[in-house]
Length: 593
Ligand SMILES: [Zn+2]
Image 1 (cartoon, rainbow, N blue to C red):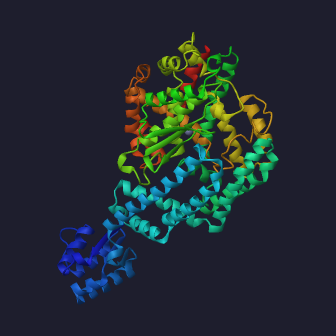
Image 2 (cartoon, protein in one colour):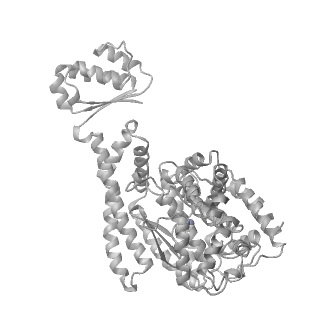
Image 3 (spheres, rainbow, N blue to C red):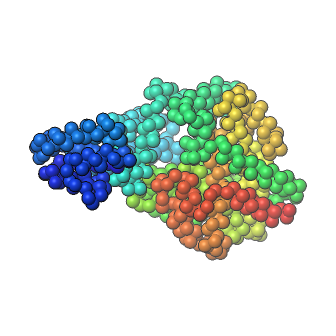
């Protein structure tokens, strides 16, 4: 479609009218600059043409009766060909420059609301006194209503739709921003308001019920709520993307473009390699992880955390650390203020150590966004899959490599002089790579981790398709743990109730963890073509590695869709065999297979 936008204030006479049309619609040089010639070109055009006229009264004033003839001709042509449309706009509605400024203001306001709510949440989980929940809820309810109205109100919709219509005049960043902001609005428009609220209420209830059910290790308590959660996810998918299978819709929510077809192929490849590899590992003598156990005071672990953050190149002026029950990363307002959390277990320092490196990877990715993206929809990481590709990259591919273990060991000796006395870097390397089927996903080693994800994927897929009843989830969970990991699940607490994702409404989220691991392995192979990664790690120099990631991934924020970003960085399509090759090589060496 060709679009001509004519503003009366730029068109004082008929000559200006014709030259503006000729320019905007790329008429040939022989264009005769009169209404007959115009009529011919508009009628003959194979491509649809849209003419927008800004300021009808001013046009009438400037062109007089000529404007009436011009309009009559447009009406005739549009009636005949159907390929021509024209419309009037008032001047104040149509100023593109103003609209862009408004868009920037809108995003700054949205970031401010987001900053306030995230900070309140962060405070809640990192140290607010127990009795302050109601006070917080009061403020959050006001903030969330205001920000909802700001993000989805009629003025915002009008602004974004106007900008969407002007697509050809927007640059890449503006186009993607409008796309991202409109996506959320369109989503909300398709779900009836009362059902949206029903979901919100259900999730508040579910969080509470899940905690109690997990505590009591009793799935039956959680079952009725979980049934509703799956049901509402199926229903919402029907509203949002009736053309897709419901589970495909939700997979795509966490990783744009991800489908069951892609997941099935991906997991089949992983299974074909990991299951036999694990069998071989299990036939060998187990590696000792004794070095990780003992008494490691929280204060020493905290000191280690800051040393690790510095070592991996985090800017401590912009990245903070706190402790929480479950480690996480969050941005406050923009990528200029990033917070990570960890949890210290005094009997095993490795949990916190690798949590800090994992969350540190998330923080590096977020803080690496181009500075000009701050306070816009493009700021920070683009998807869960790419995010996990970075966090698991630092945690496993680098953090559990021999080169890094050797480099970091003197630091461990410095922080834990008594506990590390007489120990070696090699012992540490082997301990943090001990592979062993286990019950809890978050504590799983690098080799068995994806098997935990596959169990969840299989179950979600079948429940969403109506092939498995929620009631039968614990039985199927236990059966698949036996089949994939070879272990018996003793109770629901350590089985089907262990994760918070379902109670939080994050159905379709799990595959992004596995996908991220595999993305990471392929990116590392690409990086190795340009950088001596092991050499950098041995020197404790993360700068070249971080620079590569910044140049290829981080700086782009949300500008590209995840698959496109990955393709640009990796230089080819996603191929999970990089990951399976990496695992096979690493574990064959570790276990002398
Ligand atoms: Zn993570």
